[in-house]
Figure 1 (tube, rainbow, N blue to C red):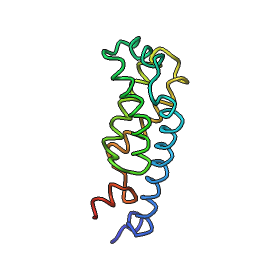
Figure 2: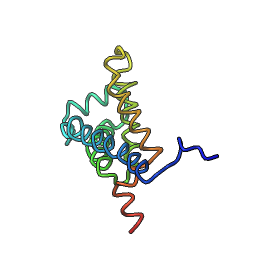
Figure 3: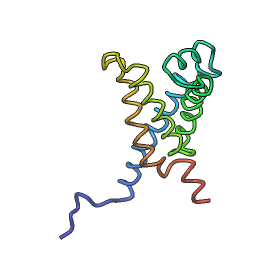
Figure 4: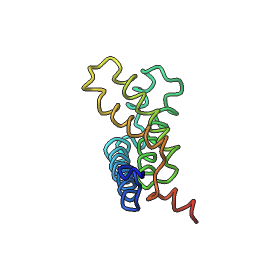
Length: 139
């Protein structure tokens, strides 16, 4: 007896792909435009803040964070190098949630934790069928 509840149809596959496309674009563009763009290029205040967190070579890590948020967000949005971009974004969100806001109440950590959860999804799952990664694999 077939279990029709779990039958995967083309429509279900398309719905699954949409369920990846929308958050990939939304979370990628949101990170790039709302958080990363303002850090490009890193100003001295941001570099000093990174240094005060105990990071060696604060200029390097400030650029890393800014590029991760801006370029990584754009790459995630279009689905190009999705997994590596999501890994870098995840690392940046770990620092934001647990270093920058580590002693703050959860309400201050929440946004970083939510971004982290989504980026971990894309680090594991990839960009899906409707991504540039998928187009390049087919070509």
